[in-house]
Length: 72
Ligand SMILES: [Zn+2]
Image (cartoon, rainbow, N blue to C red; front, side, top):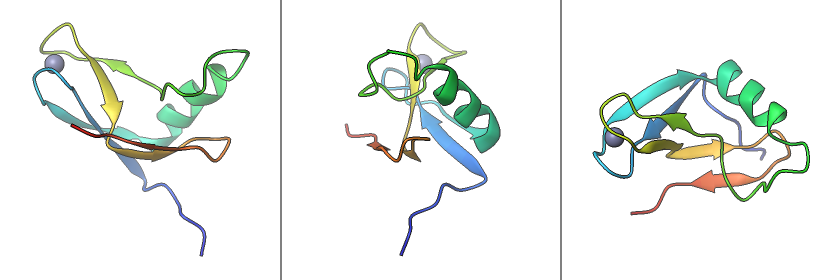
């Protein structure tokens, strides 16, 4: 069985715990743009609108097959 991303990827801010759903296409686009010699241990991130934090995916499979999981 192959794991698949959902249509929307849920992101969470580690600081204020705000959650936001972001369309998979956008996350994957950013992910692909990030692949050029950049550290792939870091998932695609978005600026939190409520604080200075960076939102990270709760569960996301990268374009190169890497699985990112958010842990407290
Ligand atoms: Zn925040």
